[in-house]
Image (cartoon, rainbow, N blue to C red):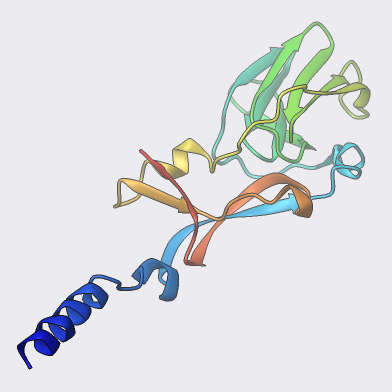
Length: 186
């Protein structure tokens, strides 16, 4: 009888250590970022001039004559007429999906967008045209905008892992995520 009790107790203790990993079987909801996708084939067609948009989340600022070019990360570039500095006029918005950074030299605006670099001739700001688009050799992991990550209560920022099969990431939406698999520590 003692042998069976010892064997039974050993088996119970053995299986007591074999618990399921709760993270695999339970889902949790977190506030985080969901990628916004666009087809890589249509990105060049999406770069265009639209009507002026209100300034928010601004980035770099460039001066071209009487114009100010103000970058808005993941969206594009604001075109502001600064002929009268006391009354700047928001003239237009150059949409560049997935744009994070811009640089300017002469009449050319260099803008990254979704793993590519676009060279845009802005000599006629009413009709900018893409002169060249070059794909970058390196693939990079895109993260939600850093400015949006620093204001959260947690030291860990959750986001939905980008899926290259869905297209390229051109922006991020802050929303409720179910069991996100990607995160970044601040």
